[in-house]
Image 1 (tube, rainbow, N blue to C red):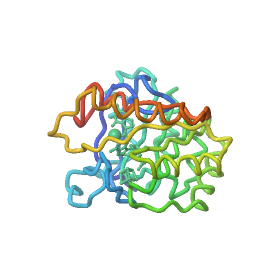
Image 2 (image 1 turned 60 degrees about the vertical axis):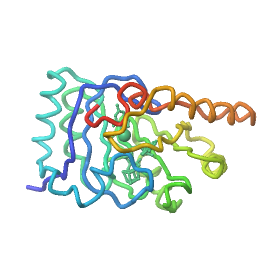
Image 3 (image 1 turned 60 degrees about the horizontal axis):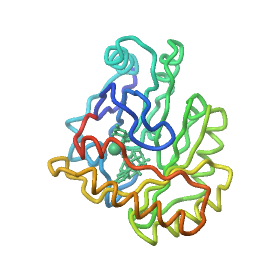
Image 4 (image 1 turned 90 degrees about the vertical axis):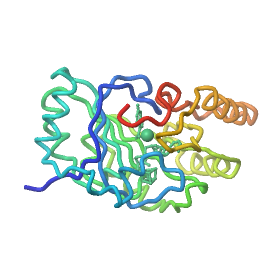
Length: 236
Ligand SMILES: C[S@@+](CC[C@H](N)C(=O)[O-])C[C@H]1O[C@@H](n2cnc3c(N)ncnc32)[C@H](O)[C@@H]1O
Ligand SMILES: Nc1nc2[nH]cc(C(=O)O)c2c(=O)[nH]1
Ligand code: SF4
Ligand SMILES: [Mg+2]
């Protein structure tokens, strides 16, 4: 039986980012990623140095853990990573949806999968210049096409600096019909270093003032709420 590489499964917590911010959720974090973002806050699910901390699990075993953590009460499951799109989450989504659970997935938009269409929410998060990655917009368009059957699709862009902001405006112009969420980047990703809510708020204020100052009314601007509450702590 094929197995999934799983870095961690945790919750219930709240979704800290983007369109579902504040919503109670259980996270399934896939191990492995085709990108290496300079500021990735989840390197324990990316770098193969951490590979021996990942579990090889069947979809049934992942589903059993989700059910246990949620006490069998249906909620939204957030599939993140790493890049979950390099694996097959179709069977998990099918099992969970049959039991009334909803599924959201976060991916950078570099790999399209058929199962995107079975999601309730597909979050595509293309990477700005500060990440050091280059977006393949054809692959991104393939992801949008694969997600046509999803309940909702949104774009979420992390902004660290002026160059990222300019890039986000161009990305938005490419996809004007895709609801857009902006979040300030968190430069401190070491889980042992505390991040104060005030630091998050300062970066959020910078981004809010840029957007409103420019009269750009398309995006919603949100902080990483979990970082305000818990800093870089894992498993929340
Ligand atoms: C860890 S990634 C995993 C999913 C997928 N690989 C992706 O990047 O969309 C989840 C989200 O966290 C964001 N993120 C990662 N590191 C960040 C940081 N240092 N500050 C703010 N957001 C960050 C990513 O841009 C993405 O939207
Ligand atoms: N609470 C909480 N919200 C999140 N939203 C996106 C996350 C991620 O790392 O993908 C994340 C996370 O790790 N925790
Ligand atoms: S694409 Fe996502 S998981 Fe992969 S390195 Fe970038 S932020 Fe981290
Ligand atoms: Mg995170």
